[in-house]
Amino acid sequence: MSDSPVTACVLIIGNEILSGRTQDTNLAHLAQTLNEFGVQVREARVIPDVEDIIVDTLNECRRAFDYVLTTGGIGPTHDDITADCVANAFGVELEMHPEVEALIRRREAPPEIMEARLRMARIPKGATLIENAMSGPPGFQLENVFVMAGVPAIMRAMVSTLGDRMQGGKPVRSRSIIAYLSEGHVAKPLGRIQERYPNTDLGSYPFYRQDRYGTNLVMRGTDPDLLDALLEEVREMVIELGGEYEDPE
Image (cartoon, rainbow, N blue to C red):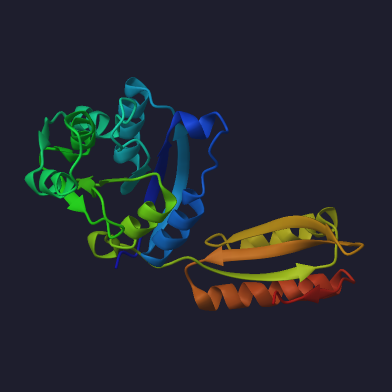
């Protein structure tokens, strides 16, 4: 386990996401799962099915983060170009992977359909496969880049297998309280507390419900003891300000 933060960037690839036609649900699951592996998602980008953009973004991110995970663009159609772009970014050739080809050929289909399906057997040279427990073609890993399907159920099955492939650090944990004070009311004292805990994140998120307004105060970090101490200080701050608080259910 690494003592330093282990970081990841998620690249969500697809014109359908940018157009609003499809709503992404993969990022939240990826962030939560990777955190349990000890990997912190520090950035996420949504990019179109444009080769130059994918290649440039991938090369930038794989150098800036410990891991890069992509979703989308590995299907059988002409606009599924993620495998091509990964190969281009690494300067390697695509090759028909015999294991994936055999898997695809198990399902009989007319020649034209089979030709399209076999696009998914093209894997960058040197890559290792990511198991697809939902059946169908797998994803793949090339160095620190993990390429997965965009279909949520398939992506979840793929990412669940990656824990042993990643050298993670300490998972980020959280503490929180519900304070019945306005965000403006807690802003300055909360800032002073944050200064005393530079290695944790202390966030405030206002709400209004059931005719009451307040602020969710959320603490995030990798040291449970430090989080407990921070939580106690935040509780005391709310009381000193004359407010009420509740612990989340």
